[in-house]
Length: 173
Image 1: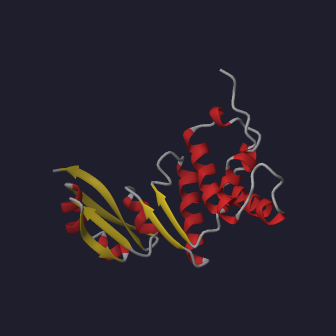
Image 2: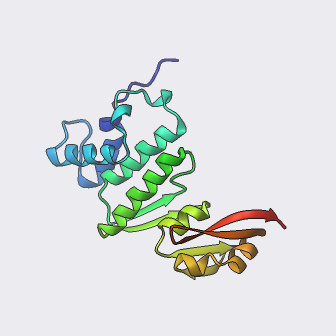
Image 3: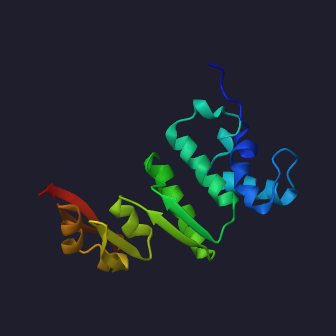
């Protein structure tokens, strides 16, 4: 099978410019090109630009999908498990990028199962259990032991690192 030869900046990340009227069958406007370059740079994706998509790992693809999302420059971002296939360094980078989007004024909603990352990066956490809201509030309130122990059926221990309380799954119940 032949390798797909996409220039990821222009054929994958550029899809994020469609809401802005980009026509991918024609040369992109300078504003589109700049948004794409900026998005690719934010996920350290420049080294992936000349790689065929089918030669990339799931994590590399995930980084480019995040770049595509960033290229939309949307006021609301919804990210479902954005760090699931990323190495720890890129997982932290993705969360930092999403937090920066929130700081620039975007509404950022992230679905995570990594409670440590949620505690570190979220301003507000909604804990769901049995399709119902078990807690809703700042991390220190939403991730209290009695809430997450009941929600996940696991005994958690909490450790504080740099002033952030981190829940650690400790024992199955």
